[in-house]
Length: 75
Image 1 (cartoon, rainbow, N blue to C red):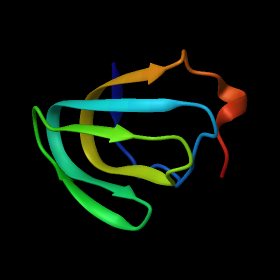
Image 2: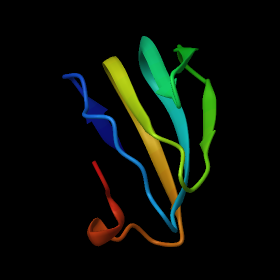
Image 3: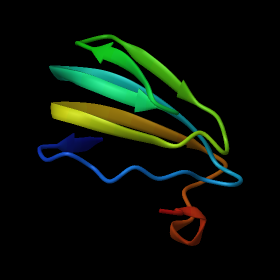
Image 4: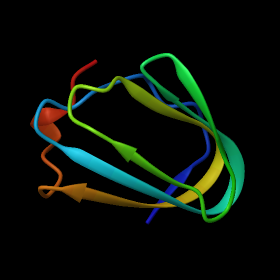
């Protein structure tokens, strides 16, 4: 579970796929320049190579596949 309270920096992963499940809050997700509105029970699939960031006050479940590797976060 992750609390997002400030705008994150746009980044991407070369190997990692992420699934975001919004539990609380509202905001939006930027995916390669496209804007996806976020509200509770929204899910977002983020494939490797997709530059992304979440914006807003959100509580999410982040499901990384494979397991999160901090060396695979590129800005």
